[in-house]
Length: 97
Image (cartoon, rainbow, N blue to C red; front, side, top):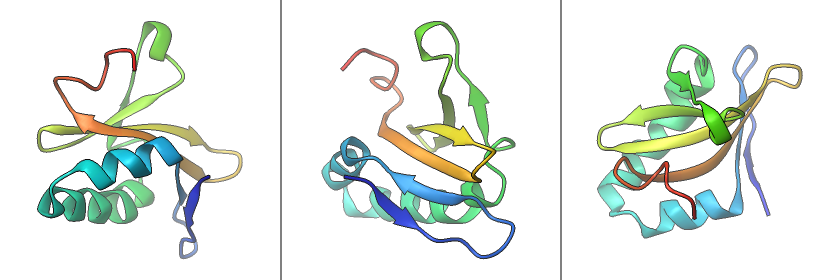
């Protein structure tokens, strides 16, 4: 199941994958709030500027940084959608699940 945030004109629509929703629920409330504000604010405005492309087996993803946490996303420019697929600490984010 995917949660969706509908954007104002010009912004990307944010969709959060079920696994990313679980990741978010596991975070301390203060960190979770900061990440939600980041994703629905700055990242929705300009996801390419605030994320970097990944390599190798993660080449279809991009990583956005918020403090010690990373938000893994896929950007669909044709439909103006950012899909959040994972949110976890930087020490663990690039490891296979």
